[in-house]
Amino acid sequence: MKFKLFYVLLLTLFQMEASAQNICPVIPQPVAARELPASFVLNKHTELVVEDESLLPAARYFQQQLLQQHKIALSIQAKASGPSIRLSLSKKLASSSYRLDMNAQQIQISGIDEPSVFYGIISLLQLTSPVKQRLGNLALKCWSIEDRPAYGWRGLMLDESRHFFGTDKVKSILNWMAFYKLNRFHWHLTDEPAWRIEIKNYPKLALVGGIGSYTNPDVPAQFYTQDQIAEIVRYAAERHITVIPEIDMPGHATAANNAYPQFSGGVVISTRSLLFIRVKKLLIPT
Image (cartoon, rainbow, N blue to C red):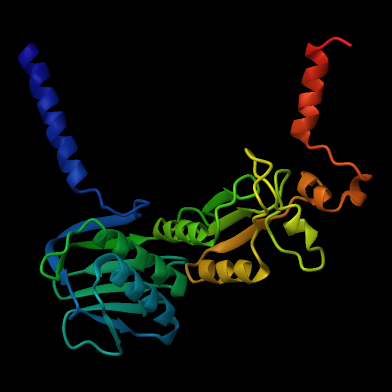
């Protein structure tokens, strides 16, 4: 009996190991993926072929990321004369779908439109990410992948009213969002603790309302200028991410009322202060 249990356990472990080896290292898991018995060697001699001008932004993004992550610079070509990565459009694919087909000589990424091709490129970047470079070469296992998003809205929310992070950190978050194919950036810019967006007609909103954070009411004013907001919106758009600002009005308007108290009767008491007053009345008899 013990031998049978040991045998079943051993067989299960072998099956789990075999299954793990066949899991495609792309997040989220593609709709269909099959590992192929071949490798593609990516290096500085690999040509990046763009078959439609609308795919040039996606191609440049891939160029930039590959150079940043692996120090490999690719040139964009109209035609291939050797091993290549080809980007193309295909009307045969379903809405929002892409295909990534690899063999020893070529990687073909095709999509129904430019955003679909972009996500195919992201999958390829994920395949390159864990591979260690040897003598300037990345040896990539070949895969055949067909994929499309399960959800149209794939979001992440950042609350900067409570804690301000700044432009560099927001860009870093957008980079990681793109890497995992998230496409909605919910940007929480105003709430009770602070107001984080410049409004030129009402400068005190940022200069006064931007003072403090959730844990420290005395932090000097921190906020984004309108130019910085526009820069981040452009940066997100290059990664097919839509920025959705959250401006809390009329609720959660303590920061705004700190800047312009005449709109709240001239006196501003934060909800945290109000809670303290109520607790104090309960604990200390009058």
